[in-house]
Length: 365
Ligand code: MN
Image (cartoon, rainbow, N blue to C red; front, side, top):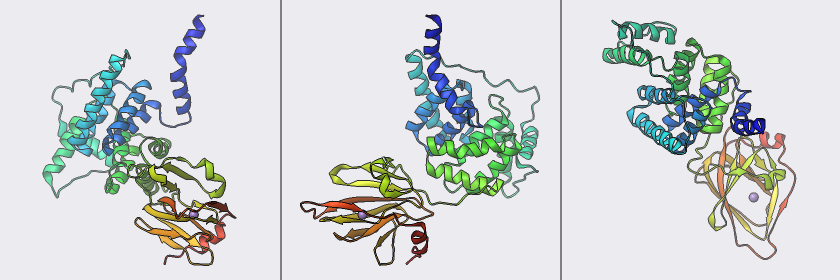
């Protein structure tokens, strides 16, 4: 009986570890990265789930606290304190459920006579790869050196490399901070984060945080590592949800689409870049498309394609052969519903829109 019981207890954590094995990032670092990005995004519901998962994977309470606390220097106290509040709630819930999380250990005390400005200057130089002096605002130069890189980085609860994984992931979730993201990807390398680990981050962020965050990091990796990446325009799925893979109609689509049914016979369809449906005809009904995010195309047979951008509304007359989909370099979401539906209404699916046609016909109007 004993081995069976043991296997039953070990199974959940073994499954988690098996999923993480092909990732260059350890489960612990994956947890730090996801929590950091959700802290910066301000997504408390996501963070609640991620914190639990990270603790399940062996992140200690001290490390989780340290990561969210470290981030106040990058995302501000409002985001940092919200996230710490969420962590506190998660820990209380887990304790009430009988889960014993590893408290970890506090940072070691600093040696007597520790000179934060001197040590911080050295740390900042290591991170930047060269001396960095912000002479435009000497007070900020002092805060960066003595406080951020001197006081905060001196806490050995997290390594310098851990801190840079946390920072890179968080800045990926801060729109408009792309130059700092690029600088910290370089900084991460200077602090010992491997290129394989950096390259593993975008897919992780895409799965656990969001597409926009992942794409922002892919752009930064392209700038620093020269990685091949075609820039695509993303959409924010927290506004109109992405929904589930559109398996029911996948056979009539080129590329991946997603469906989020709504009330009132309205469907929210998401197209990945380059995805479009086959040529098709709506018989005895009028289809209405309302583009709500990204960029895409609508084309009637024998006519030029019409660009779809948020706010574009298209009424597709009954019996007209057409297709709709995303641009090659952008996600696209449209709402759709049918009106003037008559008895015997149907959809007739025809041939795919070929790559040649798709690429040749999509000049902007
Ligand atoms: Mn249609």
